[in-house]
Amino acid sequence: MERRNFIKSCSILCASTLGVSTLLQSCKSTFYIPNSFDANRIVIKKADFLENKFVLVKNEKLQAPIYLTKHSDTDFSAVLMLCTHKGCELSTAGNYLVCPCHGSEFSNVGKVLNPPAEKDLEKFAITTDASFIYIQL
Image (cartoon, rainbow, N blue to C red):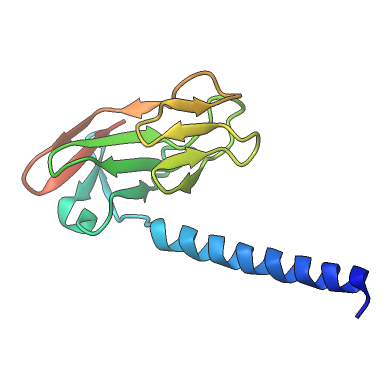
């Protein structure tokens, strides 16, 4: 096999393997949680959140999902997954969020880690009781 063809076939194989691996990791870590809406707040059962450190919450009133992080059994944070730079929907990358449009990165509590974004993500107030997590809109 010619060197050029060998490099070309190896590049394609490596790229496709890396892409599948990344896709599988992303699918494994991303979980959209069921929720309801009551009195201008999103209601989530704590029992639905037991196996995950974070979940994504979709609601028709918002233009992007909410990234809900569990810090302890009683401490949670919620940020809107909308980049403050140009308004692109963010992607999850483990414990942080990445903007696929321009590469901004945010912590799991919405703090800017890498530009071009300069403002932190929109945060939501959270309250809890023994059974539920409430995200105030």
